[in-house]
Length: 158
Image (cartoon, rainbow, N blue to C red; front, side, top):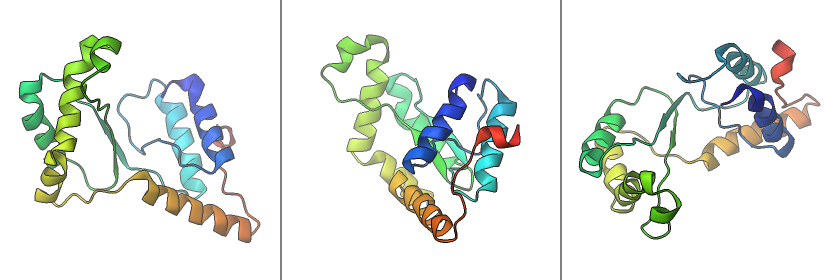
Protein backbone atom coordinates (compact mmCIF):
# COMPACT_ATOMS: atom_id res chain seq x y z
CA UNK A 1 0.00 0.00 0.00
CA UNK A 2 1.49 3.32 -1.05
CA UNK A 3 1.90 5.57 2.01
CA UNK A 4 0.06 8.44 0.33
CA UNK A 5 -2.98 6.18 -0.24
CA UNK A 6 -3.10 4.45 3.15
CA UNK A 7 -5.21 6.99 5.02
CA UNK A 8 -7.49 7.44 2.00
CA UNK A 9 -7.97 3.65 1.80
CA UNK A 10 -8.94 3.46 5.48
CA UNK A 11 -11.20 6.53 5.19
CA UNK A 12 -13.03 5.13 2.16
CA UNK A 13 -13.60 1.85 3.96
CA UNK A 14 -14.79 3.66 7.10
CA UNK A 15 -17.08 6.04 5.20
CA UNK A 16 -18.73 3.22 3.26
CA UNK A 17 -18.79 0.62 6.05
CA UNK A 18 -16.38 -1.69 4.22
CA UNK A 19 -13.44 -3.74 5.42
CA UNK A 20 -10.14 -2.19 4.34
CA UNK A 21 -7.96 -4.73 2.56
CA UNK A 22 -5.08 -4.38 4.98
CA UNK A 23 -3.60 -7.57 6.40
CA UNK A 24 -2.18 -7.28 9.93
CA UNK A 25 1.24 -8.34 8.67
CA UNK A 26 2.72 -7.40 5.34
CA UNK A 27 6.34 -7.64 4.20
CA UNK A 28 6.28 -5.01 1.47
CA UNK A 29 4.78 -1.86 3.01
CA UNK A 30 6.81 1.09 1.69
CA UNK A 31 6.26 2.96 4.97
CA UNK A 32 6.13 0.26 7.64
CA UNK A 33 5.55 2.75 10.49
CA UNK A 34 2.51 4.34 8.80
CA UNK A 35 1.15 0.91 7.98
CA UNK A 36 1.54 -0.27 11.58
CA UNK A 37 -0.19 2.89 12.85
CA UNK A 38 -3.14 2.20 10.54
CA UNK A 39 -3.39 -1.41 11.72
CA UNK A 40 -3.12 -0.32 15.37
CA UNK A 41 -5.97 2.18 14.91
CA UNK A 42 -8.18 -0.45 13.29
CA UNK A 43 -7.30 -2.97 16.02
CA UNK A 44 -8.02 -0.36 18.72
CA UNK A 45 -11.47 0.12 17.19
CA UNK A 46 -11.98 -3.66 17.51
CA UNK A 47 -12.51 -4.19 13.80
CA UNK A 48 -11.78 -7.42 11.91
CA UNK A 49 -8.87 -7.61 9.47
CA UNK A 50 -7.11 -10.46 7.71
CA UNK A 51 -3.90 -11.59 9.38
CA UNK A 52 -1.68 -12.26 6.36
CA UNK A 53 -1.37 -11.58 2.64
CA UNK A 54 -0.39 -13.80 -0.26
CA UNK A 55 -0.64 -12.94 -3.91
CA UNK A 56 -0.33 -14.10 -7.47
CA UNK A 57 2.73 -16.17 -8.23
CA UNK A 58 4.29 -14.89 -11.42
CA UNK A 59 5.69 -18.25 -12.44
CA UNK A 60 5.80 -20.25 -15.64
CA UNK A 61 2.59 -22.19 -16.30
CA UNK A 62 4.55 -25.46 -15.96
CA UNK A 63 5.49 -24.53 -12.36
CA UNK A 64 2.17 -23.04 -11.28
CA UNK A 65 0.45 -26.16 -9.88
CA UNK A 66 3.39 -27.18 -7.70
CA UNK A 67 4.05 -23.63 -6.50
CA UNK A 68 0.42 -22.88 -5.60
CA UNK A 69 0.07 -26.21 -3.84
CA UNK A 70 3.21 -25.44 -1.80
CA UNK A 71 1.96 -21.92 -1.04
CA UNK A 72 -1.33 -23.29 0.29
CA UNK A 73 0.42 -25.98 2.33
CA UNK A 74 2.62 -23.32 3.97
CA UNK A 75 -0.10 -20.82 4.92
CA UNK A 76 0.28 -19.54 8.49
CA UNK A 77 -2.47 -19.85 11.07
CA UNK A 78 -5.10 -17.14 10.80
CA UNK A 79 -6.95 -15.46 7.96
CA UNK A 80 -4.88 -14.96 4.83
CA UNK A 81 -6.01 -12.53 2.14
CA UNK A 82 -5.17 -14.23 -1.15
CA UNK A 83 -5.05 -11.70 -3.97
CA UNK A 84 -5.20 -13.43 -7.33
CA UNK A 85 -5.33 -11.89 -10.78
CA UNK A 86 -7.14 -14.63 -12.69
CA UNK A 87 -8.15 -14.14 -16.28
CA UNK A 88 -9.73 -16.37 -18.88
CA UNK A 89 -8.18 -16.58 -22.30
CA UNK A 90 -9.30 -13.84 -24.63
CA UNK A 91 -8.55 -10.15 -24.23
CA UNK A 92 -5.95 -10.60 -21.49
CA UNK A 93 -3.31 -11.61 -24.06
CA UNK A 94 -3.68 -8.18 -25.68
CA UNK A 95 -4.17 -6.16 -22.49
CA UNK A 96 -1.10 -7.49 -20.69
CA UNK A 97 0.78 -10.03 -22.80
CA UNK A 98 3.67 -10.26 -20.32
CA UNK A 99 1.26 -11.39 -17.53
CA UNK A 100 -1.30 -13.32 -19.56
CA UNK A 101 0.19 -16.81 -19.18
CA UNK A 102 0.27 -16.86 -15.40
CA UNK A 103 -3.09 -15.09 -15.06
CA UNK A 104 -4.72 -17.67 -17.33
CA UNK A 105 -3.06 -20.53 -15.43
CA UNK A 106 -4.37 -19.09 -12.16
CA UNK A 107 -7.84 -19.04 -13.67
CA UNK A 108 -7.48 -22.69 -14.72
CA UNK A 109 -6.37 -23.74 -11.23
CA UNK A 110 -9.45 -22.10 -9.74
CA UNK A 111 -11.85 -23.28 -12.43
CA UNK A 112 -10.74 -26.92 -12.33
CA UNK A 113 -11.01 -27.07 -8.53
CA UNK A 114 -7.29 -27.56 -7.86
CA UNK A 115 -7.01 -24.70 -5.38
CA UNK A 116 -10.13 -25.83 -3.50
CA UNK A 117 -8.81 -29.42 -3.42
CA UNK A 118 -5.38 -28.37 -2.12
CA UNK A 119 -6.99 -26.25 0.58
CA UNK A 120 -9.07 -29.25 1.62
CA UNK A 121 -6.01 -31.51 1.76
CA UNK A 122 -4.37 -29.28 4.40
CA UNK A 123 -7.62 -28.25 6.12
CA UNK A 124 -7.54 -24.62 5.03
CA UNK A 125 -11.07 -23.24 5.33
CA UNK A 126 -12.10 -21.08 2.42
CA UNK A 127 -13.95 -17.88 3.24
CA UNK A 128 -14.63 -14.80 1.21
CA UNK A 129 -14.82 -11.17 2.13
CA UNK A 130 -18.54 -11.55 2.77
CA UNK A 131 -17.72 -13.36 6.04
CA UNK A 132 -15.16 -10.74 7.07
CA UNK A 133 -17.57 -7.97 6.03
CA UNK A 134 -20.27 -9.48 8.27
CA UNK A 135 -17.90 -9.27 11.27
CA UNK A 136 -17.04 -5.67 10.38
CA UNK A 137 -20.68 -4.69 9.87
CA UNK A 138 -21.78 -6.39 13.10
CA UNK A 139 -19.16 -4.43 15.03
CA UNK A 140 -20.26 -1.16 13.43
CA UNK A 141 -23.92 -1.89 14.20
CA UNK A 142 -23.03 -2.62 17.85
CA UNK A 143 -20.94 0.55 18.00
CA UNK A 144 -23.82 2.64 16.63
CA UNK A 145 -26.24 1.05 19.12
CA UNK A 146 -23.84 1.94 21.95
CA UNK A 147 -23.23 5.44 20.54
CA UNK A 148 -19.56 4.69 19.99
CA UNK A 149 -17.57 4.98 16.80
CA UNK A 150 -16.70 2.10 14.51
CA UNK A 151 -14.21 4.29 12.69
CA UNK A 152 -10.48 3.93 12.67
CA UNK A 153 -8.36 6.90 11.71
CA UNK A 154 -4.68 6.42 11.00
CA UNK A 155 -3.93 9.95 12.17
CA UNK A 156 -5.36 9.29 15.65
CA UNK A 157 -2.29 7.29 16.60
CA UNK A 158 0.41 9.20 14.72
